[in-house]
Length: 524
Image 1 (cartoon, one colour):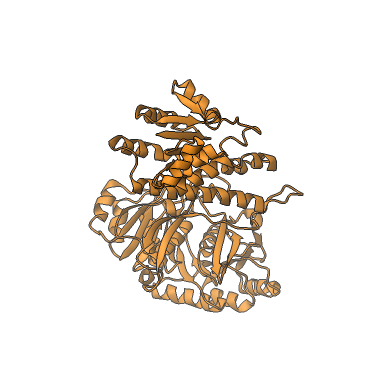
Image 2: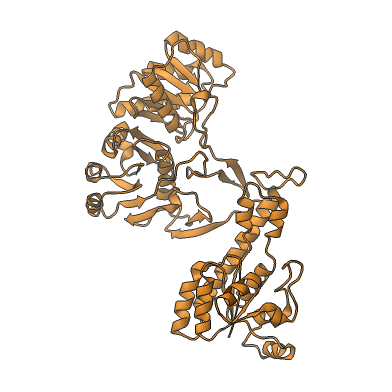
């Protein structure tokens, strides 16, 4: 049996080659890989000796030869194929080990030039992988170092690999080639040849996702569904979660959990977010998880029933005990104490997810957020940069005579952060780091304000001396009047309406402070 090994990433390849040699498999290789194996004392035959043709064009041509592809593509169960190999002196290649030139890593470097990118487009590697994967019934193909040990272990227990293993390896190989070709297409489609600048939105978008699980159904029982993750997921994102207990997550669980997690991880002090139907129905910050939960729950106990709860800090036993007052679908946190997990085991139906917070940093990627958002429309996609804007003091402009106090400014910033995660039109009342009333998803901003007040009334919360955030500008003064009538003493909104001055005059007339951000947070 012959194994052809030609890898760019040399991780684990010496150990693999040694194991194959020990099992009596002949080693073929190219260039640097052959030199490495020979330096380790392994008997290796150069592909150039096999083909009788030297590597040429700076290594661009070395495996593109009938003696390589014939050995990979010949069907061992067809006498005509085997006779053709015999007639032309071609040996079979039974195992192919290839990983490709590091194109993705190369173009990810900020100083990557087009020439650098082009030279890292692998030609012979993908061609061999396709040949081997096509002929998977007779040839095994390895495209990643993570596959090596399992293949060695199986080969040691039987002559060759099982048909199931070869098929799985072939599927992984074609997936790798698809990812690789997609990355090349993305890069070249995004490049302006004249300026050498790249667009965030390439001329052809090649989405690449890996299925994590099939779901019982979608938003409704008559819909089929599955859960996928990006091939290169952001750290601290929902797809990196580890489920510690509970039933399988549903489609709606996942959608709501993502909304809760994205919101809670935006706070840098202990926070709790309770989400129902993709909207935060209670958000609070406090000195610890228990205090944050009690405040968040108080916002809207009715909606919190059957909700998704997320913390950005460790969850301890007292917090879990307090959660016993309500039905919880999903509970998320970076960590849980041992006694908290023991207590949770009594509630076997609660889905418990542990998610590491993203590492610190200044970029959206480092914060574990998506760089691009996608919305499906009929036979098409809408793509946009994600709403990762973080409000700074430089963005804010106090436009009223009344200036917000430091405490009011703190609540305005908190309200603004929550409003970003509430479906438009969004109105959020806040006091002392706690949501007091949330109005979401209404066609009229007035109705969102009224619903927020109704919610506060149901929870027996006073809206006196609250701060209010509006995700978009007030088009008329009536929206401002509604929130002030309910008790708001300060307001934060984007500004930008043709009637901004009318709204500013109304705020001055009512004696409230108002801050413009210059940024809106529509969320549909």
